[in-house]
Length: 267
Image (cartoon, helix red, strand yellow):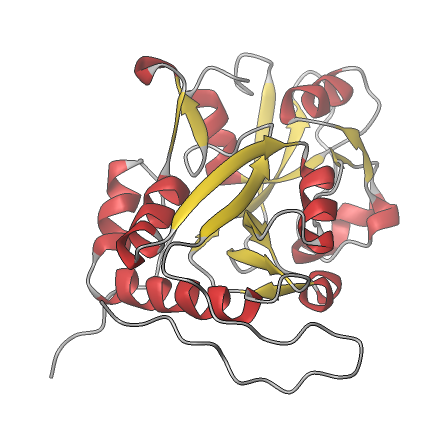
């Protein structure tokens, strides 16, 4: 097994010094309590055991390196705050932004999702033909979520909801005109029976001018072994993309069109 060595980094005064990551280190992980299927969800068929693409990814990236981990499901905004403070070592399933890049150590992307919007089919469809049209209508979203990938500023989205079901209810009660969201996770919620947008008479609109949104693992800057943990995670991402396991996991969990990086061909 490859030894886990400390990273040599230059730190300014008052910051934590880099520390090695012990072989038997228990990594404290948080994820959002609203879950994130098919990437992170409780499997009712397996006594509510946590399952999904991200869980298997952590298994390959951490457990196979001799590292154990615990994972707590926490409201997303709280998860981000506690990870930033160093109460948790890392959080999962996060899209990046300038603010997050300053607050956390950000891994390489490990999956992608398509950015779309949802609208109430029982009302006139909003005039949204491209991403630039989103800020011309009333938008609902979720607390702590990052909408920069849609080209939106935080103040342009009402984010009082704690989960997608609440957000869709606001849409149905005419408190907003559209919900910017990620397609794959919304399909995951439907497959898990959490919320079915089609039964609610909610339609999906596509934004072909937007690239897919990349998702990352984010490590606290307030744990001394954070840089070493980030190195382990990035190595795991490279390995699983290179040996085809990432693609196998995408098929296993029915990730539709995630366009995960393909393994490099051997020459």
